[in-house]
Image (tube, rainbow, N blue to C red; front, side, top):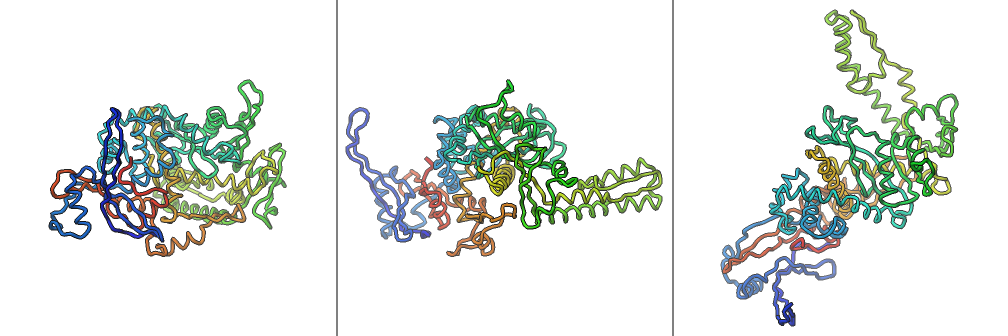
Length: 594
């Protein structure tokens, strides 16, 4: 690991023989303040300040002072006129540069700089557009990208510009990550989520099933398309009452028609890739079959699984005496493979949860039963109102039989129904038309379970990192631009988390389980990180955002030296963690972002 500090010295660089546009020959001399440090066995240098704007005699004084000559009292030598957080935005900007994010967004110009600043800000300091606008002046991001003087109209114009560029941006991401060469499995993952809006005027706002559990709010839905590792590629925003199958059809059309990708394997959750959508997936509008058929991987819903288990059907518990998965067939699914899986750990967890919720519901009902027996609560209507207030609180009302009269109340468990549901605990059945010669049963299970990566991306987008919700925009184009900014910030975060994993609690090399049905486990090094909290050199491991906060303590200071009115930008000495972070990103610590 690199040392935490090093000697600082003045370096003069002369450029002779430069010829300007008028044909005049000029000579230039630049002066830099550089720090020398040792990294392993190598001696390295980094520029911490550009002194070229200072008069020569001041540079000479600085040089002499650094060489040990006492020139002025230390307290009078320099004045720090401004100090701005720099390291966190510099690290995210370095990753954006590595990914070619600026070129991905579009042609150079004011709009692109604003859009890039919005994306970087969403990673570092997520907030409303207005709060982001004021935050730019408090970091080096605003000055270095030239957006510190931006207005709200500038931001909205940049969002509109970015939204019009969405198809081109996503087409390039698809070329990078979904095309046959980078993605030989030709596989893409897709899932749908929702977030609520503040306000009621957005055309996309509607009432629907809230995946956030936010009742009483209008919402939007958005579908995220990723590569098999969960790297975001595209996002689509839908009205808040859009069903999963309709969203799947829309994204399949995007992949086929706008990205021009053929023979893809689309992976979606149960209820998303329905039989009707499967039938329509490879049909043209005139009813003929497409020459580039798409395949798919999804799972059956509970009623279909129950039907496979009924009356000596192909799915029986005995299949899992010696294994956790079994491949079966059914005439109800001609030409398809069904891979049945049973996770005993998940089964035990669901059984325990169900019993706890049933018991909790009965505890809520006990006082009502006591009031009815004591005659303090009478009348079928009032009794029914009181029961209705509590019986569905834990979503267990379907498991209770309730009998109400004017002076009695009887509540019993539907034991047969509970046992029928319990029989499905830990079971899931994956369906796909992909031949076993192309993808074996464990591979199918692994591909379906990779949807966890999309769920992880949604967590990062919605809460962990990027704070997409709630949405405050009113215009449909602005809502779409907001979600696109969050998706591109998630793309940045995906790469940042992977690159900076050695400094965080992130599992750098999660083990590949021998049994694809078994729960995922952390590697031994990751467990050691969590238990030890410090690396072998004694430096603490941090969460991803705690690391960004630590990088922010690497500031850029405006320094005024005695005898001059000019200020010089100068970096603080980086800590070993900060230096290592930039080494992991493959970039030197920059004095400025541009």
